[in-house]
Amino acid sequence: MLKPPLALTRREAITLLSTLIPGVLLAGCGGGSGSSGSTESGTNVYLALGDSYAYGYSTQTGTPTGFGDQGYVKPFADWLMGRLPPGRPEIRNLAIPGETTTSFLRTTNGPPVSEYNFRYADSLGSFAHAPSQGSLLAVTAADLADRGQQPVAITLQIGANNLLGLLTDPAFQVANDTQRQVLIDAAFATIDADYTAILLKVRAVAPTAPLFLVGYPDPFAGLGAGNPLAGISGPTIQRLNTLIATHAGADTNGVFVDIYTPFLGHETAYTLITLQDPAGSGIPDFHPSAAGYGIIADQLIAAATGRIS
Image 1 (cartoon, rainbow, N blue to C red):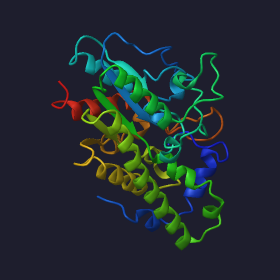
Image 2 (cartoon, one colour):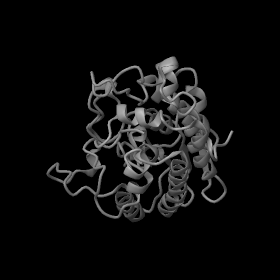
Image 3 (spheres, helix red, strand yellow):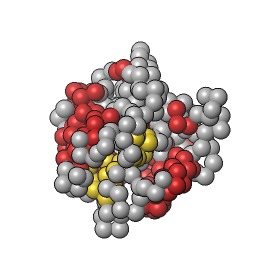
Image 4 (cartoon, one colour):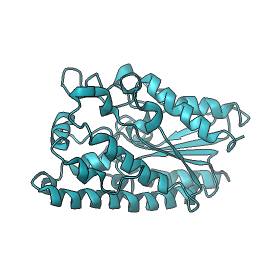
């Protein structure tokens, strides 16, 4: 969700989305600066994967460059420290703002290239040859294998950018309602297939580690009567959350983490939707606020309680 391609601004995306028929999107729907480094006081590893929500992107505290020890990752790591000696786990946050399920699975570098996450920079600080998230995950897997360990916890939050990316497709922009439904359904089919592939990679790294699949809220609900996506954004996100939840089953031994429900009715407090990114652009910032990231951490902790000790 979260950091749209430069080819289409958030304002343009919102305008285009508002032309969709809610019934089409309902198809298939079920019921800052960051730290300059990661804390490595212990021998355990916490692996965070996904997009800008997972990275901890926030305009509230300035450009969040660093290693991703921020957002909900930071308080969740703090909670893990109290349960898994000898200290705070090493954080391996590989998340990239703007990431889609498809870009995650690339084997070579391609957009989006995260110039926020220092893990993608070379020894000279250049991102020119940054690997894909999936490729860096493979490197991480090899490193952990050499250490004879797997992560003590894994969080994955990805998929919403796929839907935003659909809006940049010229075929979608000129399509009629019936054709758009076909394209939307195809986008969900891609997310579904990609989730399967991503989770196969994750489980190759950590066959039995506690795995938490994090869903999404609907920030646009915080715009109230001014929401151009009224009746659309909520059902769309719920459909995505339902899809993600289906992957938190017996095959992956994962746990779905619902953040849609606790954010509902609190979007203006838990997201930055009433602000703009960039400032003065008129483009709503739909990333979580500091309070929102805290709520996501609380949901993660609740899901992990009894599973991590």
